[in-house]
Image (cartoon, rainbow, N blue to C red; front, side, top):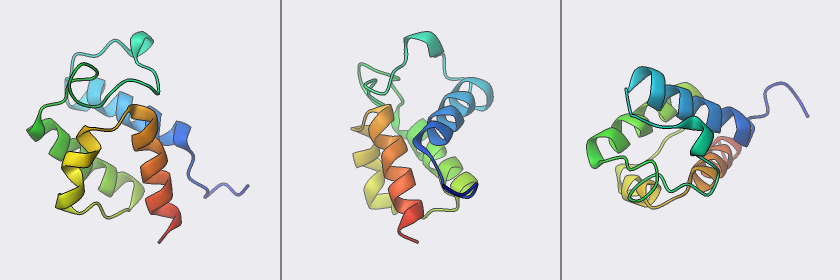
Length: 92
């Protein structure tokens, strides 16, 4: 594995630190797992926060996420989101 290979753990850490630190989303990091939904009954991001997180992911990991995919991201779990970003990066 090279140092440039993006890993799920990097994406997870970026998402959690961004939500808590920069976006002021009230999350309890100790209770969030890979199975935690991004949307309802999980991290509970509303649509505007979801768009903001998507833009930050695009910028941080240099991936393109079409607007049509944002709703699908809201239905993912944290683990699925991390794997999706890694997949998008690898496909470039």
